[in-house]
Length: 113
Length: 111
Image (cartoon, rainbow over all chains, first blue to last red; front, side):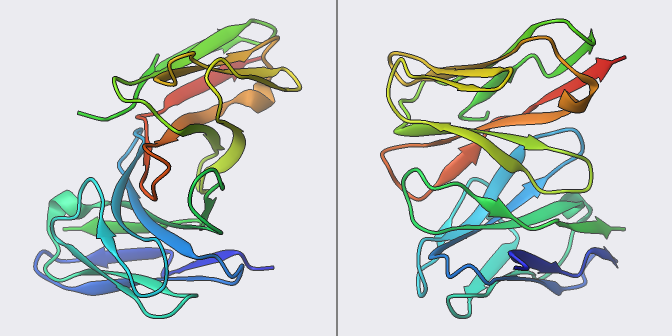
């Protein structure tokens, strides 16, 4: 089982460039999440999708957009990258809301110069 | 300001010592989870606590959920070098979909 797969693993962008981070899960989970983690810190929620067809803002949504393409895939787009968006981005999924645990991918390390 | 505050931020101890990590909030959580993260990987769930006052044990790790469901603690007995990592608490408010994390406690256990 692949679990949660994120691509790419590493990316370097110049300020103003755009890119899309891809995430796919093969566990038939309903809910998917995007977090960012700055060095030495915890995770901050960017956007989440409770179920296919819905998306909601998290704690730090500014500068990002998301698409829940289908039940498996949840992408994160940076329209005009800024140095403040340098971070490690984690995608996660879980089967349902409430008490179910998050299953994480291994992250995308993004540097914006 | 984060909804969940973890303390301490950093902890460096010798193998065999005991330690406690705290996760506090002014909000009431319907559930609280603890995760452990190693470098280059995503966090992995350790435990979920749901009921106020609940205590769960996982080998040398003891987790407690506060009576008012606003705080939690993680106690490690006789720490080992393999316990080194970033410990994160995460909570759900009102049984919703939004799961937010604390700032983490980075633990280093020295041999």
